[in-house]
Image 1 (cartoon, rainbow, N blue to C red):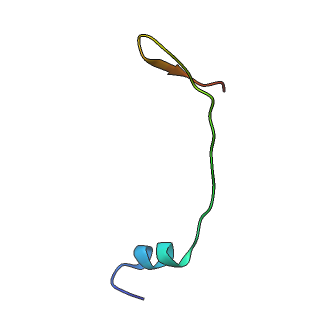
Image 2: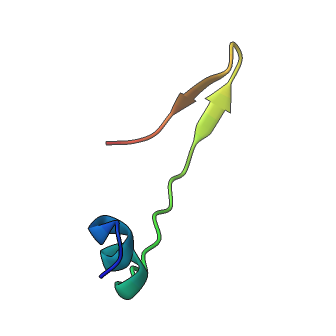
Length: 35
């Protein structure tokens, strides 16, 4: 391992994910998302 163990771990692990949200954006620029 190199000098930074966390960097080595993050290089070795591949994380794949996606998160989607429906936003209702209105003046005065407020974004609301359902719980």
